[in-house]
Every structure is written in C-alpha cells, then in structure tokens.
Length: 398
Image (cartoon, rainbow, N blue to C red):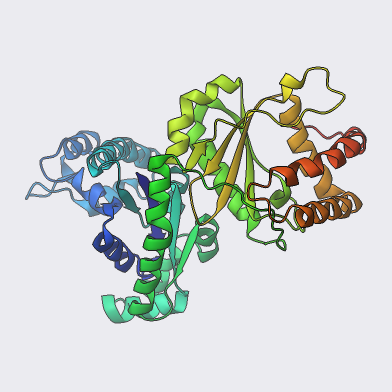
C-alpha cells in the first residue's frame, strides 16, 4: 500500500486532481468529508461537542451549528483545544478504518486542504501539491465560485503561502494552464511514479543508488533532505534518537550523486526491528545485506562501525537511510564530515576531486560499491584535519 498526501491552496485545482486519481484507481480519503462525518447529526462526536459547549451548538434539525461552534473557539485557544481533542481522535480512527478497508495493493490519497498548515505532511510516503499562481486562483474563485475579489484574497491569505507548500512537496503539479494539461500531468504521475512506488513498497523492492553519476548542486536538495528527515522521524517515533541529512547533498555547493542520504540514530541497532514496517509504509525498505561501514584503520574494534541500511522505494527520488547507534564512531563520523565540509572550502574542493576521479573510474559499476570504497582512503587521511577543526571550533555532534 502507498499512502500519499494531496494538498493545494484554495482554487488551485486539487479536486480535479483527486477525481482523476480516483478514476485511475486510487482510494480517496477526503479530510473535509471526514470532518463533517464525525460530527454528523446523531453521531457520538456531536454528542461530545454538545456536552462540551452546551445545547446552543445544536440546530433544531439536530445538526451541528457550525457558526455557533466557530464563535466559541475562534478566539479562545483553550476551547479550540477542547474541540480538537474531540474531533481529531475520531477523524484518526475513521481514517484508519478506511485505510484498512482499502486493501494491501491500494494507492490511498489523503486529500487535505490544510495539510501544511496543520503540519501533517510527514505522515505520508509522498506529498503532492497542486501549484497555481495566486492571481489565477483569485480569478477562478471570482468566476467559478462567485466570490468577490477581496473575499477571495482574504481566504487565500489565511492559508499557507505558496513557498511553504512548495517546501512540503515531493511532487509539484503546476496548474496555471488548462484542465487537459493538468490531467495529463496527473496521468503521468500515476503511471510513472505512484503505481511503481506502491508495488515497490508491497514487494519490498528498494531503488538502489546505481552507477556513480555526479550532478551539479541542486538548490532543492536541502528542502528534500528536510522532508525525508521529518518523514523518518515520524515513522521511527520514540525509537529514534535523532535524524539528520548527511552526505554530499547536505553540503551546499558540492556536486554529488542525486541521492538523499539520511542518518537515523537509535539506542541499539536491534531497536530498528520495531519500526521496519512503519519505515516501509514511509517508503523505506530494509536492505539486510549491508550491515557495516568501512572501519577506520586505527580503530581496534571494527564492530563499532556496524549499521543497518534502508533504501527508498520511490522511483522519483533516491533515498539512502543509514541507521547507526547514537554515540557510535560511525554516527559521529557522518555528522563530523558533513559539518567540516560545509565549513572548509579547500577541503570541499579536495574531496570533489576525489569524487570526480572515483566516478570516472567506476562509471560503469551498477551498484557504486567500488566508487564508495575508492573514496575511503581520502576520508582516513582527512580525519585528523576534521578532528582538529572540531576541537578548534568546539564542534559537537549534538
């Protein structure tokens, strides 16, 4: 099963996208509909609301008086917390029921207009944002919904900004053109990414790194790293002892393979067993044949470099998740070299030459293993300089 989040600003065309995905075979869970369902007339949820706020919030026909509830919670955070304490667990329970009923081969689309505002995007293996210029959205709201321009702009202003939604997006679906153009984009997304992504999760087939091809630095790498870090932290829950974006894509300005490397710290590597399934639901698949980093020559106990490793199942972005014990040499090493290379331009340039030579030498290697091994001597030789930098700056992995 693949669970994705779908969002977009008012007037962006999110409903058009969700309808097309359903036509393609997706199972839709509409957050707005669930919000209405759990407080429908005669429901236990509405009974709890009436108990909390009094009979004035119930209309004569037995339905909830939304305006009355809004007047109570609009400027009172404590009362809003009471309302959310009633509705959120009910929505979560109903969502879980719908997901369970969808079946193991489903692509489940969770349609939520306020996903970014509520900070729930990390709960999904992929987030799709319908992206439309604000002026176009204003025009659509005026022409198709009958709003006056001031009202349309006010409603847009109460939502997340375009920049905030774009930062949350694994996939941006531009919708500044016509409907047919948007539907073509949705169809390609379904066929080329969502269907194979679901299959990879279900069959536990990770998308590995492939041949070492270096590309120019991408300004979007940092935001992508933040999204993956948040997703891993959500899936790992209390087992996690910290998640960090590491590797070359975490060093601004450094050419790299287009792979997001992330490190999950745990108390013990055995603890990972507790969250293998949540991580798989997040699109990260355990690769059991990789169990250790290359130990440093001076380390008397090479077993301290043990790790566990997962790779992403998303064909649209490659992710490597390295699980290491918090406080171990390998955990510290990954953070130290990332921060030292961020701070030291000559070291960055030196490392880049090593990367380029290794990439050229092993360009035909499909799994990049020899490319990684080719760089190890440089790391071994550079470690004293990195440690000296750490001491001089007071650096700490915390």
